[in-house]
Image 1: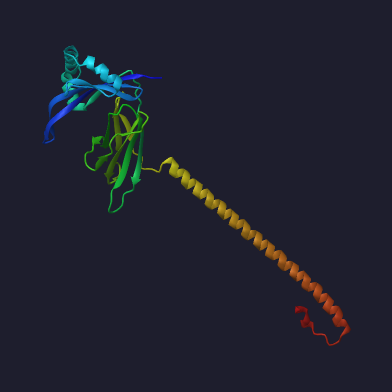
Image 2 (image 1 turned 45 degrees about the horizontal axis):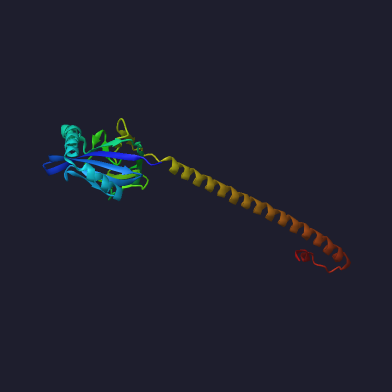
Length: 268
């Protein structure tokens, strides 16, 4: 099924950033059209025209690049982007979507390195299978945003319209603290919170239980083998003693015929 998609983007263009305060020079308005997951054409307010990326769309943009269309795009830029500059500065670049189904991220929080005397612990918060691309991952320590010891990968495409991102946090554990990974995405009505649980995960517990069961089974097998060996040895010794008695009787009978028979011959 072929589905046309339209992306409308408002991108903030930075003039400079000093003393943690950002200054915005202007907003760039972009309209992107795709068909069957293929980029067809795009309007960029900085260039001021449409650009075609296929032979068919090149012919289409020839008609779209006219003064009336340019006036319409400038009006859209003002209503959607310029008039919302405060929101863009606060939240970041925004993207509007037409006729597309969004996908909520699957969030996983785990430890990749335990703390030691020389090195801090390392946690990774991963978001998988989300769409659209724009996403924000924030670390909270006891409810307060953390800024140090944080690193993050780029938003990586999966090749099937979905994306993934991985955020890392290095920290030194302390008793009673609460570490939370907060994910904000277009598909979520409110931020998703994933709280770090320092106890062993279910998978690790399963490994431990399986290991203990294996040790117990091995102990039972070894014990059974030892008991079987002891019983077998005792039965063999009893049998040997029975054979000695039979030999003694035979020897005694022979000794009755010979007066000089020595009783110690029973050890033979």
